[in-house]
Length: 115
Length: 114
Image (tube, chains in turn orange, red):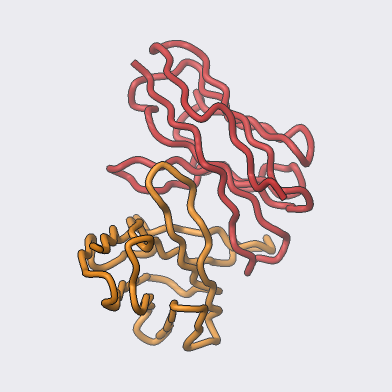
């Protein structure tokens, strides 16, 4: 099953409002990443937060991570119509002796920002 | 940098035909991933390579699927024979060695098998 589960599945807001998306996961992680996907395009990396970090900012994006609750949230402040896209969380894990953690993606949240 | 380049962007083929998808990763990236995206199953990791060597192919659905990486700048995903249920968007992504590095995705190949 998917490691990360986003909530809500869809979110519709007006321009200028804030958008909050949540992600829950099941097993321990090394890092959690958020990606955006515009229609017909590949995923674009937004922000990465390590398991020993609690909060991270990048422009209008704010990500929090609560490892005790196995959850993360992505906040987009002062949303714009151009923020309309699908947003995915992805969790990275160590895979035995390998040095890289595979990323497992959730099903995504579809965000629609109305002008 | 041109980013991850995938070809073709769209592929329509008939059931039973061989399909080859191509990917050029970002220069200097040591890891390459193939993902498949469908509405029903979301994004699934099919296989990934480290320094051209396949590390984990547990996501490859069947023996009809195979992937190669003959050199650091090229990878292929082949489906032979193709079936309608293989219809999906296939993404290639690459990243640097550090496991905390983000993935860089190509724009995908939309495969339709009729």
